[in-house]
Length: 139
Image 1 (cartoon, rainbow, N blue to C red):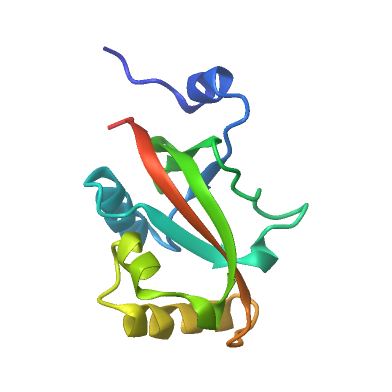
Image 2 (image 1 turned 90 degrees about the vertical axis):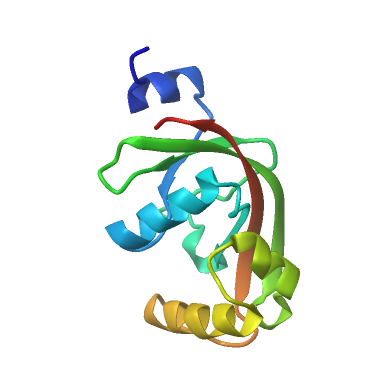
């Protein structure tokens, strides 16, 4: 069976958004491996990323395509839940579902630095928390 191109996937799923996990190739590959293994079923981002010029807000039921760093399709995920929390409201269970952190303190350390670098950090920063499930693997 031949691999589907990104255009074929988008043509078949016109509401799908595309995105990359992580901020570099190595992190992206590691996160995609966690999604494929079923160990990552949640993610988060600062609400400021979701603007008309920025990322599209996840929507429950929508299926989106996570891309490999080179722009080829990696996996399709379906959004199961979207919740807006303040940074200081994040809980250990949600962090565990992200799959890549030792615990809540590890998440707080890494994400406070990430948010500080990408527009500013505060304890009451609003973040979008998404739960998803993998529905297709394009590997």
